Length: 325
Image (cartoon, rainbow, N blue to C red):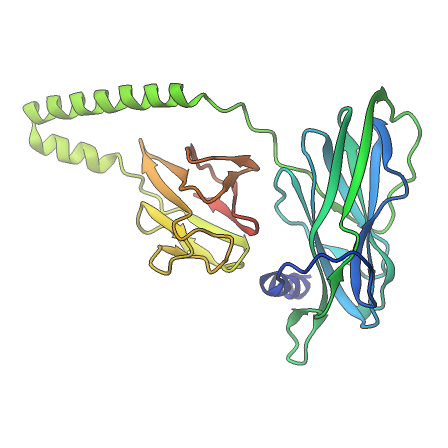
């Protein structure tokens, strides 16, 4: 299983977004659904399909959804020998990955993906990217070239009428859980954050002056003791640095596509100065610098938020890391 995981991690590093087209070709991947009308509480079922004359040893797919309308449940592949590889999920996007130790011919359904309809709404499911995996002559994972994405959007109509009473067919094959991260609490209004920050700054300055009057030596020791002693790290799961760990030897730590950053991400969807990790009051924080930054699926939008162990951070469209303290 370790070799299988390593194979697929290598694939994810090398896979790029494939092109959208409007018709299936001899080597293609597409999204399909038997029905597009549902009731609240129903199980929404779509399939990821592929046609390929080349035997494959795995596949990946990313489906964009509206978390206010749908909640992902799981994916299941009935292709013999295809095993699901769990990945950290983010709100609004399903990440599915499967791999096999033996080559398989595919011509039809790769995986069935299930969602729960949360409320009445008009929404869409979009296959943002997908790839078929092969093992190249050197024995490493590689995406199958010249694969196109055909039908990539499914429009759904969910009524407010209660459904879900009918028994659904049991899931078969290799089941991959797709549980999204826990819903974060509602963000605090910016003016409240600004007021608290101002009061804290005034209090810190007043305390600093008072300490200097009493004992300069004590002041120096006090400031040293407030610095975080542990050295946390970020573990990249997707993007240009996938599979690499970066220990935060110093903060602030700048992240972006400029090579001068502390963490360099060579990605066209990453800004030159995309985000920053810094410390305050013996805690770590992540700040968005205007490039599109998400913590557990929640957008920062040019603000900052505390980083806790296990938090999943997405930068731009595809770079993703987990914060570990």
